[in-house]
Image 1: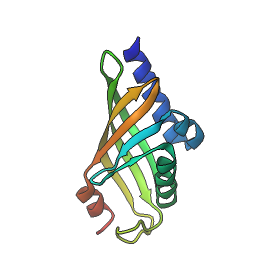
Image 2 (image 1 turned 90 degrees about the vertical axis):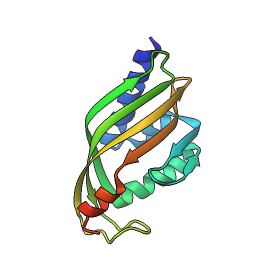
Image 3 (image 1 turned 135 degrees about the vertical axis):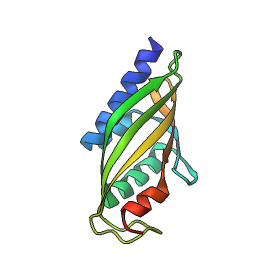
Length: 136
């Protein structure tokens, strides 16, 4: 059942993200979570993830739709493909000025799972397309 458990974990992860239930979201992360940022560096730990999400929640409103989940048979690796429907609410550091622009982007994430928690998440989306959609 590790495969099914991994899919269940990711289902709960994305449900918590979409509902804005951040405490449930954080409870699904390993204490030493590694978060590989899209076209950026890596951050380690739940506290770093909290800081990242606080910035995201301040600058963006996003809902992830068309979610498709994949998991290895042993449940240790997984992936997700989805469509991001978002609004750019407040100017993020180093990015164009925000004025409520909306965007729709395909995206994906890769996961490592350990002891029933997300131990690594690596995000991918087309930043150039996002910039085009927000009028950069």
